[in-house]
Length: 134
Image 1 (cartoon, rainbow, N blue to C red):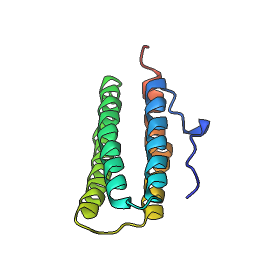
Image 2 (cartoon, rainbow, N blue to C red):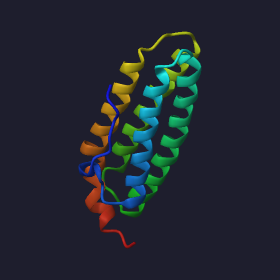
Image 3 (cartoon, rainbow, N blue to C red):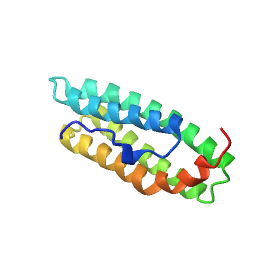
């Protein structure tokens, strides 16, 4: 997996959320880079925990803005957040239980999920949030 790069086309038009998405990009790159080391289990586990914690904070911020904007697809969006969180927690649990996960597979999964989520889901809410008073 090459370094995952933030692209302007990924902007949702809300500076706070764009900044948080950029942090997620950096965390995904970190997991991929650390997975190349000798102690993949420990390093990836700690990085996944950091990713989970940050993702939870981001989802709370995002969902609070969606509530303010009276976003009509809030429940569907929250469900997609829940699915990702559960999937990444399962990966962390699998690592904890000794399962080996191919680092490239993990990085590609996270990268693809974030790109797809931003471009297909987050872009849907963009007009609602941009219309909020700043």
